[in-house]
Amino acid sequence: MAKKVSGYIKLQVPSGQANPSPPIGPALGQAGLNIMEFCKAFNAATQNMEQGIPIPTVITAYADRTFSFVTKTPPASYYLKKAAGLSKAASNPGKEVVGSVSLNQVREIVELKKADLNTSDLDQACKMIIGSARSMGIEVEGA
Image (cartoon, rainbow, N blue to C red; front, side, top):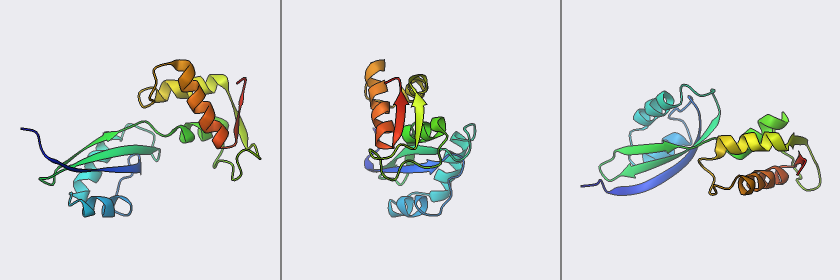
């Protein structure tokens, strides 16, 4: 018999740096889960990744106070800022351009994010990433 799911918790946790401080501690504590057990499991699962990358994580909390979690690929905004060499996006997107990326860099980002995008068409996936870039004030050359 399958375990009864009591809820889902969505967090963005830096890879290899999960600790019981906010936002992880309060979110897991409220669900009655073992915070240190999650931190150890998450850090072990992300130890081979570059440290500090934001990793979207979906934690499934079960009624017997156990959990499982799934990690996704880092957000497109992280990859776009890295490709453009920026520390932060534009504060006024649409009116100011803070950087630019090439169409080849967009394709590389699509290859990295392919598993988490809701399309299997490469052109449509590129359009999604280009839209994210535009909303961050990053110009895409060749698009």
